[in-house]
Image (cartoon, rainbow, N blue to C red; front, side, top):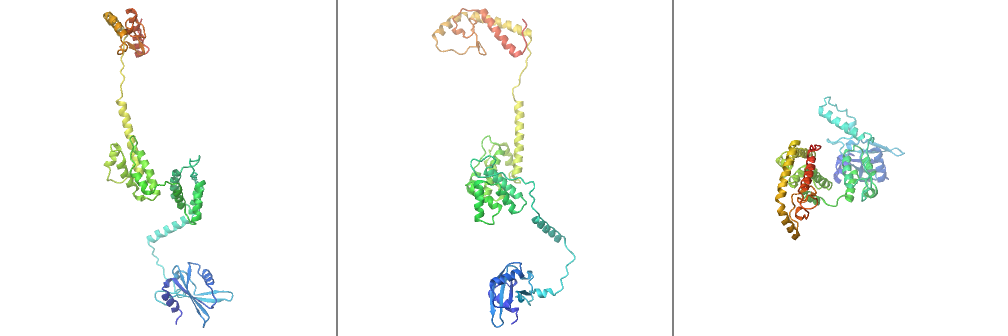
Amino acid sequence: EPVTEIPLQWCQTLNINTDHCLALLLPKEDFTTRQIYQLMDEVIPQGRCFIRGMKKDDATATTSVLLEWDCRVINLNAPPTVEFGKEGHKARLVFPTEGSPEGGSPTSTANEPPLAVSTTIGPDFITALGDFVEKCTKGSSPYNGIGYRKLRFFSGSQPVPTGEDDYESWMEQSMQVLDEWDIPEAHKKQRIAESLRGAAADTVRNLKLSKQDCTAYDYLQALQDVFGRTENAADLLYQFEHTYQGHGEKLSDYIQCLDKILHQILLKKGLDPKLVDKVRVKQILQGAQPLDPIMLKLRMKQGEEILTYNQLIKEVREEEARLEVKGSVVGASSGPKATVKTVCPMESSQEMTQMRGQLQIHLSTSGAASTMLNTTSARSDRPGPTPDNTFGNIVICYKCGEAGHYRARCRNKPNTDKVINQLSKLLNAERKKMQGNFREPQ
């Protein structure tokens, strides 16, 4: 039976892919599996092999070993013979597909002339080669930590110590910079770990004990489980859908409030990030004040292209500023206007003389009624309506001219001249307040 047919039948019997197998023919019988693995690691360091079968032939004093690789054996560059040991023993490597039209051994391909390479290379190949070189260069570029601004400290203590961030602020900052850091994974974990203190550092330490190959995102997820909000994604969605704009609250403040809840939902993986803008606009249309002028404009644009957060907040803030400026202009134009009137000294003197004459007539006609008012005031305990003889905080009696009481309660003798003088002084004082530094000529 040919030697090449032995491993081929062996693979078919064990139902193994022949493209991943080799047969090792050893000239000795006393070989252990450990020695075989060591020999294969030295001869063929690529890939990993597994011993799938071993047969010993007492007649020829040889050992046949069937080896299976995790890749195609034709890509391993396996030599046809292997020399090992101090005695110089030689072993053979046999391909199960050797001699078949579909496969070929390294010995047969080594003697064949190399195939001619086409001299025409298309632009697609050049582009793909450039992308490949860029990725390799990017992956092997040395890490440069110049200009790195460290994260603020976070310990999870309450109240938040001075110089530290609370959990919400620290997590938002860490999530943003983690996506922007173009550094190896080990440096990402180092940067996050160096900003942790106290209970937060203990959380990461326990994570590394239970999971050896953890990443920087695993650090953040562990901190989210320990220090994050206890609500699940369904509770946060319910809170988001039942958050409404308050009376007097700006629409921009309401949008920012919704965005904070959306961020927590994304951390809980309760929403597809591609649907965030659509869900945000939908809740704004439902939860905002129905008579808000900015809200009315957003409703008119409903059905058009969905605005992102930056576009939405920019448009709302611009509209709020426009309405604020418009309201201040309208308020200034509709305010009370002061009227300025020029008073001539001659007109003031004539008006004063006329008022004195009217006052004398009034006092003379009210002389008879004063006696009846005095008797009435003696019987009445309740004060009547406030008379007109008050100037600011000064009360003048129209009967005697004294200050501090009303004519209805006056028991003094009538003094018309004194009343006129008192009223003249008060009128002059009021006119000076209105005219500024103008003084009536003596």
